[in-house]
Amino acid sequence: MEKSGIDAVRRTFGKRLHTILDARGLPATGFARSRYISDLIGVTTPTSYKYLTGVFMPGYDILIDLARKLNVTPDYLIGIESLNSYLLYDPTGLNPIHMTLPDRIKEFSTAGWVGLFFYWHVAQSESFDIVKTGDIIVYTTQNSQLADGQHYIVRYENLMYIARAERSGTAAAENPLWKFHFEDNTFIELAERQISHGYAEKQASGDLGIIGTPVYRFPAGHAFPI
Image 1 (tube, rainbow, N blue to C red):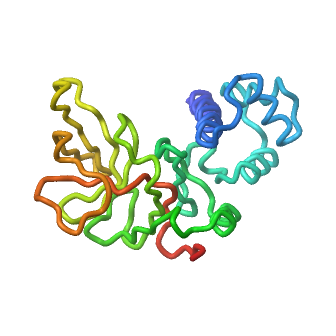
Image 2 (image 1 turned 90 degrees about the horizontal axis):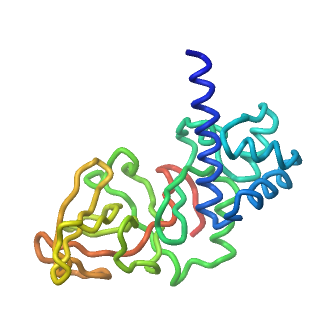
C-alpha cells in the first residue's frame, strides 16, 4: 500500500513538471527538458530525466529549490493543492496550473497593464469550487477566437464565468453547436450564432458573450499591482 502511494506521488511529480514546462513554452523535447531541469537545480541529466518520467522523486532540499525556481508550490509538485497559490493559464487560455504568488506578480509591473489586461472581481453569485467570492481574475482580450478545449471568460445571463469550450461532435457544419463547461461541473449548449465576442451592455436571454481568455486568478485577500 505504501509503495503504491509513493509510486503515485512520483508519477504526479513527473506529470506536473511537464505541465509547468508546457504552460511556459519551455523546451519541448525530452532531452532538452532533462537538460533544462538539470541546469536549473544542479543535478545530472539522467537524474532529471528520471524526475520527468516519474521514476525518481527529489529529496526535500532539491524539491524546495526546484519549486522556488519554477515558482510553484512544493505542494503542487507532489499533487496537493494549496490555498497559498493562484492559477496561471498559458497564452492560449489552456492548462490552468497552481502557482505561488510572490515574485511572479512583478511581471505585470514590467509588462504594463493598460490595454493588455482586465480585471473581473468575482461576486458571490459567480463563485464556484475554484473561483471564490472576492477573487480577482486577470484576463486578456487576446486569443479569444472560439477554439475547442480553450478556457474563456464569458458573460452569460448577466454574470461572468470561466468556462471551457467544447465543439459538439454531432453539430452540422453550417450550424455548429458549442458546449461551455463551467467550474461547478454544469454546462450549456449553444448554437454558434448565439455566441458573441466582446462585452455588450445588453445581452439576449440565453446568449453567451466571450469576453477574453484568463491569465491569472488572484485569491481573495491577496495584493496585486494596480
